Image: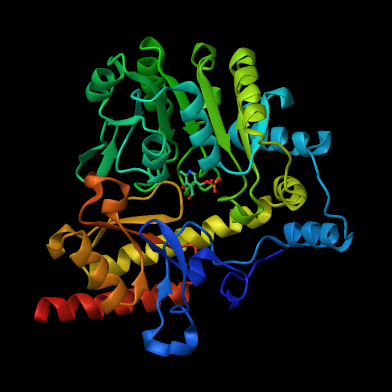
Amino acid sequence: MTIDFEQEVDHYGVNSIKWEFVVDDRELKHWDLTDPDLGDQSVLPMWVADMDFLAAPPIIEAVTRRAQRGLYGYASKTNSYLSAVCNWMARRKAWTVDPEWILMMPGVVTALHVIVRHFTVPGDKVLIQRPVYHPFTFSIENNQREVASSSLRLTGNRYEMDFDDLAEKAADPAVKLAILCSPHNPVGRVWSREELTRYAQICTENGVRVIADELHSDLIMPGRQFVSYGTLDERFLKDVFVCTAPSKTFSLAGLQTSNIIVPDAELRDELRLELRALGLWGTNPFGLVGTEAAYNYGEPWLDQVIDYIWGNLEYLDNYLQSRLPSMKLTPIEGTYLAWMDCRDLGLGGDALKSLMMDDARVYLDTGDKFGPEGEGYVRMNVACRRQTLELALARIERAVNNQVRG
Ligand SMILES: Cc1ncc(COP(=O)(O)O)c(C=O)c1O
């Protein structure tokens, strides 16, 4: 079945964070500035990582069928759910996962917080690679642990791990845990097997446990190959928590269903006891059927959405090169998040944010949100209709030209 991603979708009245809220001092505040009725004054939301598209038809059917049963009591995972997850991992990521290894949590951010809290103590350090998805930092700082950032190195417009620095940071005895973003949000890198192996080697040699956040691992652009941490040498799997979910792949974040895969039995039991201690149990019934339908029947939709997003990224790159050369797209290998270098505009974080939000009326994330290394960049979510992207770029071009003239 061919999916029409150009279809207009009404995003109002569904409590959508992306469409009906704004972040104000780390809190979500309800607003209505994205209302299209405001015409040129309406703000285009291209920030939080939700797609603008309707979910895949098999997911809508499964969730609707489940809702129509009218039974909303406690629910738990079944063998058919676990098979769907394991088959997906085997088929799409060449990783044979034992169903026993899977623990469920409402979200990956919850998992990060739980693991940081339980497997480190206040004052310990947690290694991350900035610029990176900002809740990595929150999960560390919210729990009075310290961030150790081995910042990514920019060679031309390509981000790479800085292995010498990583080894030095990992050797600090205070570093007990590392959080890997694979593929990397926001810089869009899909790490190679060689890179992941070197990373794993450094962490293992220094007794640093790893959380491999593979949430974006199904959104891989043409010509690239995702390598799961779970497919590295077995000696690296003793101390790893691999986080996966259908939430980015199929835009199901609201169903709050994620899978934390822990191959090592002892580590898994320890995490299981911690979940029990926190009273974290049970699963969203719609998340269960939605995930099962997504993994069993969603592949044709996923392949088409990746094609469409790739078209958007190409359109964006051409537009910037021909009309907005002061903004440059970092080559995106995975994710639908475009990471753009705006340093030629010469604007600090607040001024850049104001240019985008107040002048262009486009709600993007400015790069400083992902760490000081992101200063001068913006992140744009291009999982939207082409028309939305065209409008956003025309608005940004106009605002940039006005700013240059002003
Ligand atoms: C790398 C990464 N991890 C985790 C999350 C959030 O995951 P969840 O909604 O499961 O908490 C996101 C959301 O964009 C993300 O980009």
